[in-house]
Image (cartoon, rainbow, N blue to C red):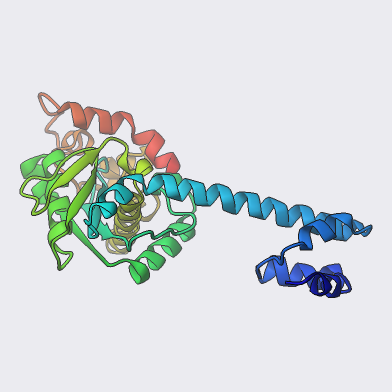
Length: 292
């Protein structure tokens, strides 16, 4: 935009400029910020500060997303374009299935605000991100392992089963699979497990959002079927409210009978030797519930 055009813009009121460049988020013409900063109007200088702050936030967000695409970019540059991220939700709850998701992002894809689902505290924001992903990704799918499978296989192997089902549900074979923290048995593609992958890989973060929102909706549906347990609020996690409801109202078909509080309510006592993973899951429960 020419200097003359900037001069024309400066003849507009600060309210008009705010509407165009803040509310409507129109591109900021070159030279406008400097002109606003030199404008004697306090409103113009305040608008300049707002716009510069937005530019800095956008720049920081772009850098964050580029960093989260490090693993994907390395694979894309090798010609492996169909890179699937895989993650699960619902390992620690006392009720409901464990749900996994797989997602293949377009090359270079960046979705503002996308992150590990545990870091996104606003449920509406998680849902909005999930809807954007479903619209934009090359392919996505969810898979789950039911309560009976969790009790038969144990939660760790049931989580892997849900992950495998998610990959198989994509409708195509990925060139490569990135998985949060582990590797998937019988995976049809080469894969890599990344510790804390949902915080380090955008594809895995996408899968974590899809898995989390899918499971949350399912638990809300189960809450209408089984009122009084608070499933829509705590999503099946072993909160004090949930444990008290089990003791007062009884064990439901959707409760995991291999998990300690459910076994106790049934008079079976604790398992003789809980797995290290199950112990870690229960130890982290309070923190997870607070975040989710």
